[in-house]
Image (cartoon, rainbow, N blue to C red):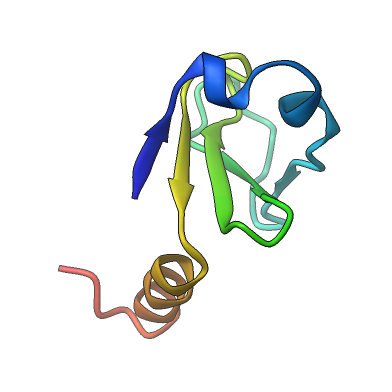
Length: 78
């Protein structure tokens, strides 16, 4: 996992990403803890805080993201 700097994720690359939020996010509470994810055009997955869309972006390789989501789905995250 890498934290994307504003330089790396800035400009056309960042704005062209199609960010999506989990359908399980209620969106009713402004203080809710939600992340948004976007495909990085075959270079992994980006994740960001939905309350701070201009903030840092975490960059996961495809393998890292698959392992992370597998552990979440199977409740094996410590």
